[in-house]
Amino acid sequence: MLYSLFLTNDNDINIYILHSSISDEDIKKLENYIKDKSNSRARLINLKVVDEFKKAHTTFYYTSEMYFRLIAYKYLPADLDRILYLDPDTLILNSLKNLYESEFEENYYMYVPKSHPLAMTVHPPLSQFTNQSLYCLEPMTSSIKSKLIEKTKAQVRMISDMKLAQHILSHNKGFIISSQNSLLYDHVNWTKIPLNHTELKRMLCVVMRKDNKKNDINIAWNLICTLLNKSTIY
Image (cartoon, rainbow, N blue to C red):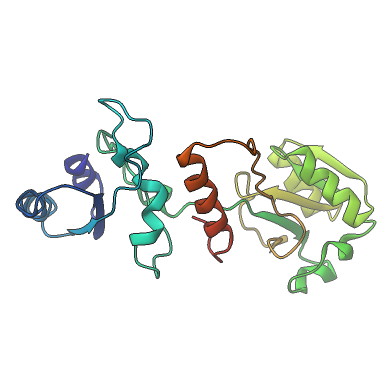
């Protein structure tokens, strides 16, 4: 994985290795390998952790280290914006830049004709779109459509054609709502307004048996609670 990573990515890379039993000698060998193969563009950061998963289900192929990703937040620097987890048997064929910089949170946007007064509004509530003609650009979940109808009291229609969405905006026929997975390109005829300050947020629900005694269930639950209390979603 490391060699293919260096062949396809020419930016500086910090590589964090979480382990419980690798010797200092082997860590030093790995550091030298990374420095050599990356032309000193990458560096290894050694994080020795306490193995909390000795009682977790493991096999010859699936060792307790597989679970370390669940406790990575305890050991990684607090000022990290994001991390990219890679399995060591991954063959990397292309640059990871676009993947690393992808939006992992589910964000929605409203496209408004440039001439409309709302195009100049900062952080408008959904109530400001009351009785407007709203079009959701598919793919869009039914729960988002229902939330829009509830908050705007508007008739919300689903469309799947990008050209139709552009026509609606160019001729001031309505507003377009889309997720980050189906964005329109920037144009002088419309303005893109982020909606991540509104009720268009997805919630995480966790369902588990109350009498479940498996140790890894409690670890996963505590991890979810910890991450949901952070301002950044990992």
